[in-house]
Length: 403
Ligand SMILES: O=C(O)[C@@H](O)[C@@H](O)[C@H](O)[C@H](O)CO
Ligand SMILES: [Mg+2]
Image 1 (cartoon, rainbow, N blue to C red):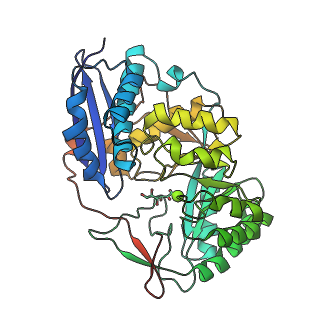
Image 2 (cartoon, rainbow, N blue to C red):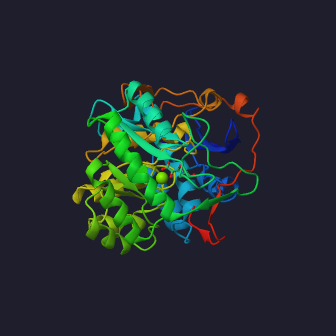
Image 3 (cartoon, protein in one colour):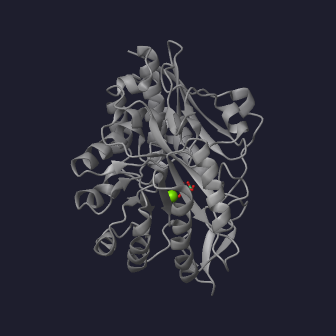
């Protein structure tokens, strides 16, 4: 038995907020779990500190599945991003402990490596199509095999995915939500031109991706997917909000562009119908927001039956702890597709020293025991929490739209 002696939540803001759970066993082993929920961080802190940690003390850290069931079924109130991020943090920390106890990198415990590295996609963005293509060239020169393209839309003052910093994108930028302006007509005129220019400049060997960020209706999404087909996108992400999963049938009727959905999903129940009806090609659910490695494996196993591959979310609001967990997971599953990789700032990397590394378009989690990521608590304490919200989005006439 590996008795859980103590657990605490560490909140730090080395450029952006991160919530980390640290679980310690009586024999002095410890594990880390990410519990960051962008813009709603303190709700998860309270869920963990006030409601989860008291139930963990004294339990056997080896009983990962039983503890998962205890927290999920035991709460009575199931699912939801706050609950599932909290459970995910416990799950990640326990897998970290188990792998450290075994003296192995986590991917070995998950069944061993199915591939030599994890193909990642980087984010090229610019105010104009030309600037975005120039940025994409830089990613290509760094060895990336897959690149996401987001460009500014003429006539709109700001656009999702476009930022001043080129290696990362930080949307949670206001102590109150900033307000963006949206026009579907202007956007739909721009994206096909972006893909045409990018294909011409970058050639056929690189995978090109795009995130619609939930902004279109199904029929608009069908039209966009169709107009991108000549440029063979790897995927079109979140074309329409996925609460209404039937909507994807309509998109499918109009395009063979592959669809990726699910970064906001938090359980297998959100993804089940989309997967079983083969309405998507990539499932974006991620370790931190979908109940940890234990639950994400179930989602990936279901997806495998329907030839749906994974494409885990990996924006900067997912801490290096999640990135490490995702890489062990990605390496070990048969139906891996691609992993998003938006680099963290140097400050964040210093607070979370890690064993994973990038080479020639692929990430590898490294071979340190456990997740291979640590938390420098003294350094973390120098960066106190700062309230930061994701933006909201309005149509040009002021109507609130999806961000
Ligand atoms: O695909 C992505 O990376 C995104 O959609 C994210 O940038 C998302 O907006 C943020 O993670 C929200 O916190
Ligand atoms: Mg996205």
